[in-house]
Amino acid sequence: DIQMTQSPSSVSASVGDRVTITCRASQGISSWLAWYQQKPGKAPKLLIYAASSLQSGVPSRFSGSGSGTDFTLTISSLQPEDFATYYCQQANSFPLPLTFGGGTKVEIK
Amino acid sequence: EVQLVESGGGLVQPGGSLRLSCAASGFTFSSYWMSWVRQAPGKGLEWVANIKQDGSEKYYVDSVKGRFTISRDNAKNSLYLQMNSLRAEDTAVYYCARDSSHAPDPNYYYYYGMDVWGQGTTVTVSS
Image 1 (cartoon, chains in turn yellow, green):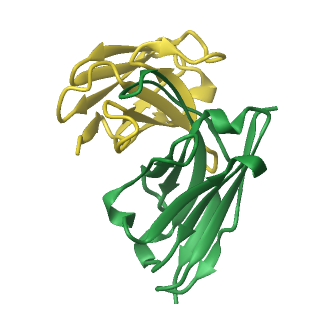
Image 2: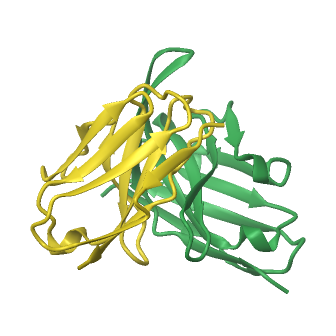
C-alpha cells in the first residue's frame, strides 16, 4: 500500500504568515492527491483535489502543487479561521485504498 | 441542501456488532461512490471502506476485512456499515463521505476528493 508522510506534524504561525505543508508519497501517485481541513469536533472539509485544483467555495489563499511523490499545500496569508489540522490523501489507485497522511496541526503562535 | 447524516453509533462490548447508517439527501445518491472514514480519539483520518454506485464493487482497509461489510440501498438513499467482531481499536468517530469521481474508461477513474461529509457517529468498543 502507498504510505503518505506529512511534515511538519505541527507548525506555529501568526495571522498573515505564509504557511507551507508537505506531503510525500511512498511511490508515485501522479497528481491524485487531495487536501482536507479539519477543525476540532468537526468533519473534514475538502480544500484541494487533483493536487492543485481548488474546491468550489474555498478561498484562493489556499493552493496546492506537486506531482509524483512530493506535494505541498500553501496558505498564502494565514487567517484566524485557518487554524486547524490539515490532511493529505492519495487516490492513485481509486477505488482501491485511499490513504491519508498523518496530519499537520496549524497552531497560533 | 446536499447532506449526509450518520446514525447508529454507541457503546458495544468487544466481540459485539453494530450497524451504522448514513442518510443522503440533496443529490443523486445512486450516481456516486461512497466511503466510510474513521478517526480514533486524538488520531488522524483512516479510510475504512468504499462501495460503487450499484454496489457491485466494495473495498476495505486490511484491518477490517472479514469483519466489516459496506452496503447501500439506492432506493432509500442510504449507506450502511455492518461491523462485527468489534475490537477496542475500532473505537472512533465514523464518517460517511461522498467520493467525487469520473470514469472516462471502465478501468480508470479521475478522482476529485471526498467532497461531502456527514457529521460523524461515535463508536466505542469497551467492556
